Amino acid sequence: MSTPSAVDVVNTLMARDLYSQWLGIEVVESKVGTSVLRMTIRDEMVNGFGTSHGGIMFSLADSALAFATNACGMLSVAVDCSISFPVAVRPGDVLTATAVEQSTTKRLAFCDVSVRNQADVLVGHFRGTVYRTATPHQL
Image (tube, rainbow, N blue to C red; front, side, top):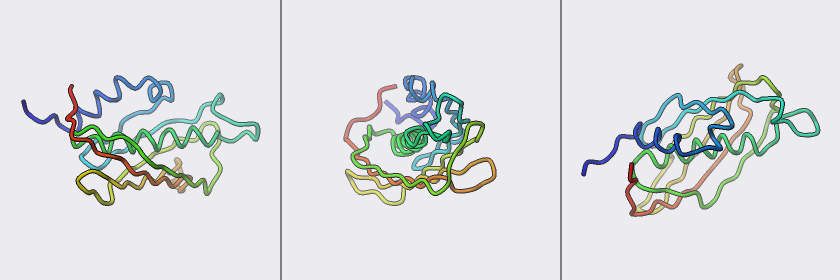
């Protein structure tokens, strides 16, 4: 059995990921160790302050982490993640999350995700660590 391509892995994960679909996430780019996702903030995604709920941006970045780290073909799951919100996000903003693996070991991968708005302003910085299993993706 051949190893699936990064695009095949990400497309399969996205097809199974009803939450990312509900968020309206679009896969822009898929490569081993890299993922670029885009989504638009909708009215129902805001908190009581009228800005995007932090969990929405966290979810976008988390999906970018998952796709970047699973694109190698091995099942990888998050074990630690954190996010910073330097700029408020509002309904109508179009966010692009770019995930890049920074380093990997046999069982861990460390990934940075930058989230930028339509004006190319950094609105979120996410750092995630995944545990990479020895289980290949079954597509």
